[in-house]
Image 1 (cartoon, rainbow, N blue to C red):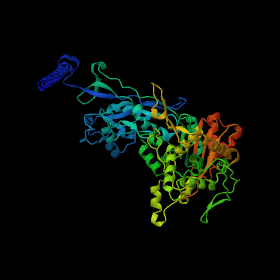
Image 2 (spheres, rainbow, N blue to C red; image 1 turned 45 degrees about the vertical axis):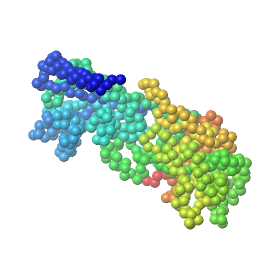
Image 3 (spheres, rainbow, N blue to C red; image 1 turned 180 degrees about the horizontal axis):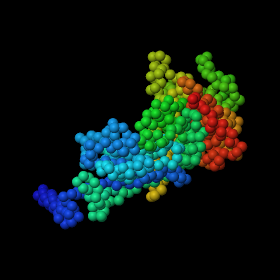
Image 4 (cartoon, helix red, strand yellow; image 1 turned 30 degrees about the vertical axis):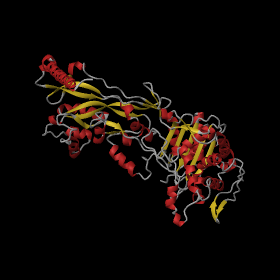
Length: 614
């Protein structure tokens, strides 16, 4: 143990050593360093950050989606400005008025972010024409100079919600960046660009530069011997199949809605299409961004809104396979149970509508023909599992299963935004139906059994539901990052972990049989694909504000499934009308690589269908 006196001596030694090191460095710079000494009256050493190349982005087949493009920024050194000069050529070439020119010139000189002696960006990302014209004129204006930089070049117009774009950092981001960012730098503003900013950005380098008294660069100090090279960002390989994404977006054109497809074997997202789309150039071009963002924000169709992960809908009848599994697991029903349906379900003399269909002699036929009566009764059986007068226990039991299926919570997608959807709890119904006014029981909430009422799901959650069905009882967290191209990458444990649901495997067999019948003898025949076994379920999501939404879930092939699909098209009517053929086409395109000539009529019919009224 070192005593107090010993500690004091150690501290004194460290202090003296530190002072000596500083004096030695000062001696080297001022006495021994002839380069600086010879220029002492006219030069200073400054540190200049060197930007790394931002990481590239590829799809799962390593098709390049996002690269970097060399550009030039116009910089200005304020202290060198000639106040008598009109800068007419610069204004004309850049299309700037006197006021806009002045606005770009003036900064908050009282802040720590700007200095009149430190060059700053006057006009970023010059076009080739602007650069060439300015080259001929800039010799007249010594305060202005070019600096080479990079901008993102997006090689596809598809998946704009997923890929995202960059934006200039604000002061809060500079402060929170711990030296990573300076004013004028760019960072991921949305999508993958934002989600994986830390991987894509890389590490800045450092140059020691000799400058004259006006801040102009003369040369690298010591010919660059002390410079630190930047480390380029990581190249990302996404799980996305850009061809399938493009195909899904074409199916959705003229419609509001989304298509999500994933590989149930590992949770990798194959496509995550949202419609309407927007022209990504409106947000990716710094000169167009403000106006473009304003236009998109006021568009009544809300193209910026990512309907695949943010929009919440009543799932409609695609919820019935889940209700079937819970009822079978709890033992309140069995696969061969017959429940008659006359086209109506009556409770206390009040009719609840179904539709005419063949007899529901078992749960398979009930699913195939989407009998509302059958699943209202099953929902009541679940909620009444602890007795008619104790619906709280039954609803909490349903919520327990729903949570394991990823409903009512975020799934953990590696994306900046994801809605949790909504799964109602007893407290909600206590507020809606106070006890002093009669309270609530299973008949009050039996619309949940057919996917209506207060329950809401995202299209991503619907795709995850069908992945669980495809796997007969488990799923992997949906994700978008598959690998890194330029270095070893160990996928995070949360994307490798298998999530088992508390349903015995044997209960999946009758449900899957029913979903097969949906395609070849039920409500989803428009999803049929020749020589491809598909399981599916139609849904019609009731919309109190207009036409119902068309919903469909599917997986294929039935054995050893490779794709799980959820389709939601707003205001398009019944599930079989629009969503079902779209799901069938997506499965066919992915598993067979193309749509055969004898089925192109269906593709053209669906893709040309206009649901959004002009």
